[in-house]
Image 1: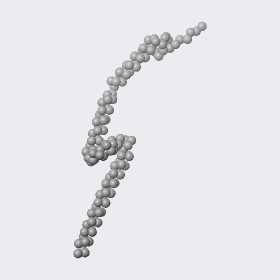
Image 2 (image 1 turned 120 degrees about the vertical axis):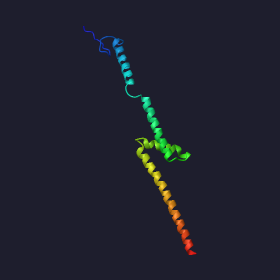
Image 3 (image 1 turned 90 degrees about the vertical axis):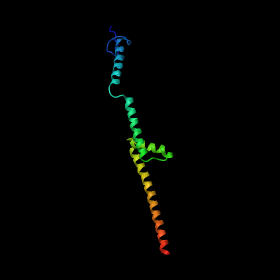
Image 4 (image 1 turned 30 degrees about the vertical axis):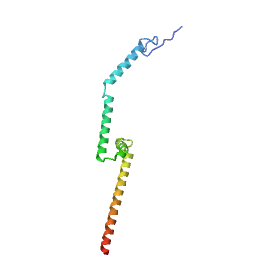
Length: 126
């Protein structure tokens, strides 16, 4: 008659609540402590990234200050410009806004030319 031996995590025969289970738990806690001491503090890294993001966004908003009603959308636009996933769409949106601004400026210049020609033609008729 052979009896089955049960093995616990430590690889020793015995009951499940034996010393092997304690050794396994102790190794985990030691590994966890060692992992905490290695590398930079994740909280500090996250805080640094947040400060960098706010700094870049503030710089962009100070370059071209938006009206107070457009501040949330300008802030979101600036955040999207620094995020890798949304960078392309943000660049497209920025170019579209620039295009609209240039079209409005061109229209204004053309209207001023037409107005100047109209005034010059009136002066020539007299």
